[in-house]
Amino acid sequence: MKRIFKSIVLLAAFLILTPELYAQVSIGLSVRIAPPALPVYAQPACPADGYIWTPGYWAYGDSGYYWVPGVWVRPPRVGVLWTPGYWGFDSGIYVFHAGYWGPHVGFYGGINYGFGYSGVGFGGGIWAGNVFRYNTAVTNVNRTVIRNTYVNNTVINNTTINNRTSFNGRGGVDARPSREEQRIMNDNNHLQATSQQLSHQDRARQDRGQLASANNGRPANMAMDRVNNRRSDQQARIANGASSGQLTAGESRNLEGREANLNKEVRADRMNNGGRLTGQEQQKINRQQNRMSNAINADRHNANMNRRMQNVERHPQGGGRPPREERGHEGRQRR
Image (cartoon, rainbow, N blue to C red; front, side, top):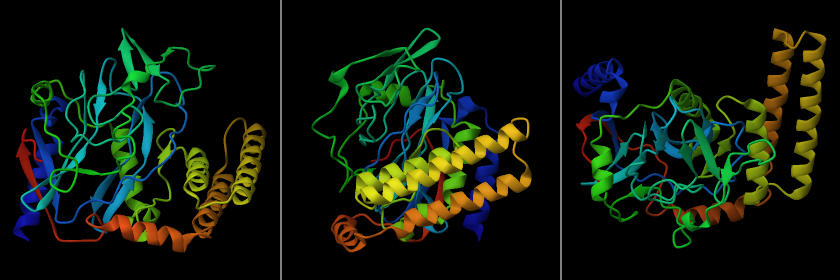
């Protein structure tokens, strides 16, 4: 009880800190079991100019590990990039180091999150003045819609592209921060995750389909094109289900047809109501989307094969619910 009270007090102090102080004093979540392997998933197309990709990751809650989908988000201001959070193993526990925004990408454990985050730095794009330019060699961008793009194949790290290890330290990725990454880590010009990013994680926490204990390391939703975009959420589930083998081509076509019909229905309802949906129409759409989600989760024709693969991957990584503790730490990297 005393430990819980201390954690609450520490969290309250954290919430009133300015964004610049966020990087110096952060909450370290510690558990005694490794996060599951990173799932393989497809990146949705960038929804609009100015969005930056933030990779998916395993977070930890009262019910154990849960997957926070990768998502395109707007940065808090021009000129900043996202340094992903990461799990680090140290002295028998796994500590989560929160991600942050800043003018440079710092150390994120050497974890290969893909799509420009190969373990060191970020190759998915650069700022050119007030404009963000996308490297289409590693990011999914529709160049007929977004024209500020370039191609740089040298950022593709072919030596680690298939590495799905999700934590730094013994048994995981053996990487330490360089002198430059250490300098970036100690920089005061860091900004915490945006309110949209925090609500995105909270939504994932409440979705049981994201729990490792429920999905055996294969989350129902692995990535989406923007926060709280429900229809994109469904399309991403279909795409990832097909690429992973959970859905057959016929099942994918059936679900895509249902999704297309629902989108037509939404457009018709909006046209009849001045561009808006009534509460009753919104409830009806939510019911239909939930039925499609259930259909995707139910299509497990190769579940036995998946379970065999997951059992091989599970050691030493897992998704149970061990005891945990929360504690603060000041600017220290753990490995």
